[in-house]
Image 1: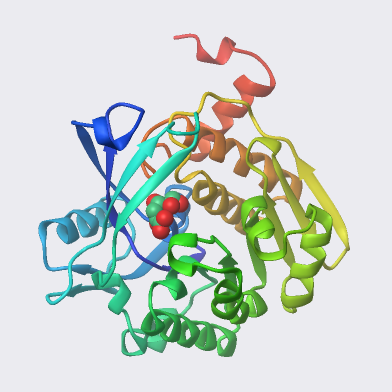
Image 2: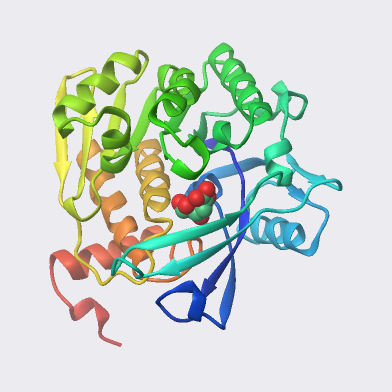
Length: 325
Ligand code: KDG
């Protein structure tokens, strides 16, 4: 069985029962979410053996995160409980001021995860591992986190483990384009598989899509695959070895909460890739997964199994008879 390790911050997500401005929200649902954790849970759900490096506070929220990871089957041996710093929390505002778009309010400064340091990264975490996943959020959390993430990458390079990186820009943490380049560059350079999105490319390069991808390629010296998520416009996979672009269109669905779509996309693409599927098939499954993620609240709850994905694709691409009870 393939083994994958992820690293990042998982938080408590407070998602209001209603869409609209935060100032009028009274009732909230409590979820557990965090970009890299979402990717890892998606992969675990698709039959990959996973493990996650993170830190949570010594508080009930940290307990919720650990029990969620455990209940999903993710190995929590490398989750640190930090008695000095709290678990991060964030609030979600759906469909306001832009219909269909989600805005977030973070309470994550000095969170336990932002105190992950090099000493938390032990080479034995990576024994028999096939792939390591992290995103631009982790090194942006703090200088300590960046050093820890670089140490993890160094170990992976030595052990010939495939490094997968998603640029995953959070302006809230990276602030400016220059800071984003400074923090993300070494990770983009080391990645064998690189995920990004149209928003990230525009933020970094401010050019049209093809030009931005070729700018990114100049930095991504080790990348074999560059995958660009285009939301409603579908996705593109650039296969560096054969110099080919593969495109796949999206599946139109009603958007309830767009958070987590990119993560379910990544987790599904990687799981399909580890099964040896063609890049076209990887994109087809990943686009389906992203569509399923935006149609429900919460990041983890909508993450599909292979059976869910196959049913979704059959109904979307063929007929509704499969839905008969
Ligand atoms: O990808 C969804 C994430 O944005 C969300 O769960 C919170 O990890 C998060 C972040 O840093 O924005």
